[in-house]
Amino acid sequence: MVSKFSAPRGTADILPLTIPLWQNIEYKARSVFHLYGYKEIRTPYFEELDLFCRSMGESSDVVRKQMLHLTSQQVEDVPQEEKKGLTLRPEGTASVIRSYIENNLDKQEGLSKLFYIGPMFRGERPQKGRLRQFHQIGAEAIGPESCDPLLDAEIIALSTQILNELGLKSYQLKINSLGTSEDKQMFSRLLREQLNPLRSSLCQDCQVRFELNILRVLDCKNKSCQSLIKGLNLTDAYLSEESRQYFLEVRKALDNLKISYEISLQLVRGLDYYTHTVFEISHSQLGSQDALGAGGRYNNLVGDLGGPSVDAVGFALGIERIILAMPEDQNKPVSGSIESFLIVLDDKAIERAFCLLQDLRKERISCEMSFKPSSLKSQMRLANKLQAQYVLILGEEELTQNKISLKEMKTGQQEKIGLSEIISVLKNKKKRIDSCCGHTPAVN
Ligand code: HAM
View 1 (cartoon, protein in one colour):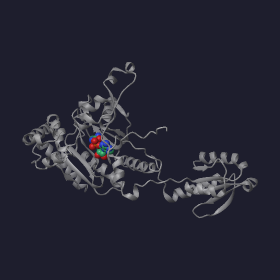
View 2 (spheres, rainbow, N blue to C red):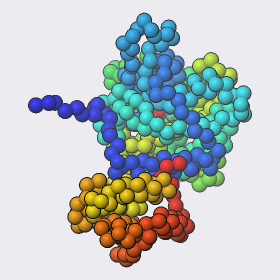
View 3 (cartoon, helix red, strand yellow):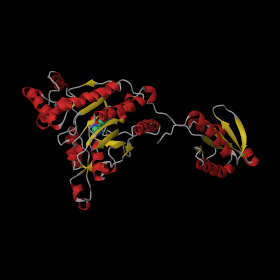
View 4 (tube, protein in one colour):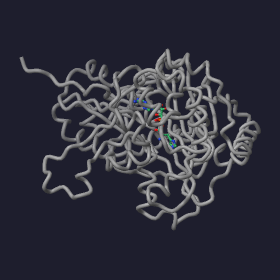
């Protein structure tokens, strides 16, 4: 027996009936980005490995364990910089910053507000809500002297507006401040003092984190580490007065916008680049992989990657997790409908019908027909399956009269129309429907 192929582990096909749901999510996200003045950017799906090592941090779980590397078969032809290794992008931030620097976007506008929607790749152990190829909706605001509490609050408001418009309600927003790089160092020192006596009780991963980046211990999902962390006396004593004031203003802005949040001193985020505000949005319906999205400020990354010294803040939401958390009546697969189905009852009518089919499509009226004439009953069944709004019937009688029968499926009303008029009749009907329903394009 010939063996069949399956999609690689941790990936999923998005089948035609689910595509309208994805298009709707993308359409709503794009429209919210437009409201906030964000423009789309598309970067390659793979980048130099070093980009992620230097941005997310060599010691981050993503870089240590989850990178999906590309190997080239033609090593001799590969340019020197690519020999260091190419890898599928595990997130969008580093790529956007690479592009911002490479294309001198800082010279084009004061504040670059960029968004992206697309696949990301992480070699994680797959489970519900955790895939190896998943999709993010993300945004980054980058620009000189853009470190402003209102911009942090705006980015949080933007991410929650997308979730709200998608009908998500019971999500929780957690925020924290890591302060400046110096504050982060102080945070690490204070944490080290508390964790040192407990070190041997930490899980294997946290033993490594203790050495490489101790703050990540706070992010550990291991149950025994979690209970150990709960017993720590975490405070924000590491924050300088300026950082504390900054965070206070972020919170004040969120309060004014009536965005509810919880301050979590444990929230440190798993990636190295963050400074000041960090946030995470979780949903109880998601189980152990409960983060719908996350983000924060990262003021040093552009400079660290060789660019100008400008500030930045951003977020990313996971589309697969959004779908899991959406109300059930909204995340079901739906079959789309077509406008018309052309039924041909006579072999002699096929040529004429085929030309009409193309003419309708040129006039942007969606239409299908069966190329092999069968009984009226079986073709009506097909038209129903495709949810056609109108059926056009071309039989021997119609052909001799140079007419076509038009049946409106909703009302059952049927009339004969001159073949030369059918396109304008359907176009007028379409115009009437569009103007009374307010047509929403599926794709923007
Ligand atoms: P992140 O927390 O690594 O942050 O990912 C953001 C979101 O992507 C997660 O909250 C989750 O919804 C989704 N996600 C991550 N990994 C997976 C996975 N394996 N399977 C399914 N969904 C997943 C970032 O990526 C940062 N770049 C966010 C950011 C933008 N910070 C500043 N700007």
